[in-house]
Image (cartoon, rainbow, N blue to C red):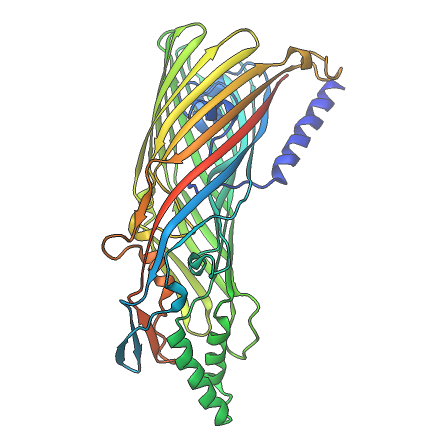
Length: 506
C-alpha cells in the first residue's frame, strides 16, 4: 500500500511539472534551480546535497541516503526600463531605381521615448528526484529549464516605437536529466547525466515601413490599378503595403535535443569540499512558421512561410570550494564560465520566400563569454531553521552592437536570501498516515538589479539588430530600399523573485 502511494505521489508531481510553463524574464539563464541552491547564489557545486545536484554537480547525489523528491516554483516580477529611446532616421538614405535621396524624417520618431516592459508574472517550476541504488551507486532525475529568456512589450508603436523591433521574445529549453553517481570512496565521488530536452522560440514584432517608401509603393500600386493591371507586381506591392503595422509572428520548436553533465566532488576532510561540473553545449535545430497576421491572401505572394534555424546553447564549467569552519556554519565560493561566443549569428531561413522576396533573416549576435564569481553562506540556527544568503555579479553576454528588444539583457547584481525549515508537524504520518517520510521546505527571495544603466547607440552606429528593423531591405522587383537609420537608448533592469521548494524524504 505504501509503495503504491509513493508511486502515485511521484506521478502526480511529474504530471504537474510536465503541464506547467517554464519561462524567464529578460535573462539568458535560469533564475536558479531549487530554492536551496538559489538562496546560496548558485554557489552549489561543492555542496550539491539535494536532488538538484543533477544540474549543479551530479557527483553530489552520493550524499543522499534516502529517496528524496524536490518540487517547487520560482516566480519573477521583472521591470525593464527603456529611456531616451530615439530613432534617428534623418541621417538615413533611400534609393529608388538607382538614385539616392535623403530620407525624410518620420514624425512618429520626433521625440525621445521612455517606456518599460509589459507587466508579467513569470513562473519557473522545477522538479528533481534522487535515490540510492546501493551503497556505491546513486540515481537522480530532474525536469527543469537550464536556459531561457522572455520579454513582453507594449505592441502600440505610438507609445513604444521599440515595437517595430520586438513586442515579444522567448527562447526556452526544457530538459529531463537522468543521472548516475558513483561513490569511489569516502573522499571522492563522480557523476554524469544526460539532458534530453526540447526548445521553443517565439518572436513577435510590428512591421515598419518608412512613410516615403509607403508613398512610392502606393503610387506604383495606383498606376497598376489605373491600367487594370492586377498581375504579379500589383499583388506583390499590395501585399507589402498591407503588411505595414501588422504583427509578424515566428514560432519554432525543436522537439528533441540533448546535452550532458559530468561532475566530481572531492572531500579531503570534514571541513573542506571541492566540486567541479561541466555542462555541455546543446545543438538546437528549430522548425516552425513565420506569419504576418491579419493580412489578406495574395495569389503567389506568401504571407506565411516555413522557417528553420540552428544554434547552440553554450557549455559551462563550474568550480566550487566549500568551507565548514563549524558544524553549523559554511561558506562556498564558485566560479562559473559560460561559452556564449559560440553564438555569433542567428540565421532564419524561409521557404517559400516571405512576400516572395525574403528568403532569410540573418542577425549578428556575437555574444561574449562570461565569468561569474558566486558566493553563498549557510547558518543552521537550530534543529528546525536554517538561514542562507548569496551574491554574484552577472555580466551580460550581449554586446551593444547586437542588443535588441527581444534580448534586453544587462549587467546585473544578484542578491539572495533564503530559509530552510524542517517540518516535524507534517512528517512521520502527522499530515497523513501514508506520509511517513520527512518534509522540509526551502524558500528564497532574490533581488536582481542593473549594475549600471546600459547605453546603446550613444557612440558610433549602435545596435545593428535594432537599426535593421527601421530600414527597408533592397527588393529588386519593387526597386526601393532604405538604410542608415540609427537607434539609441538607455536600459536598466530590476527583478524581484520569490520561490519555494518542497522536499519529501521517504
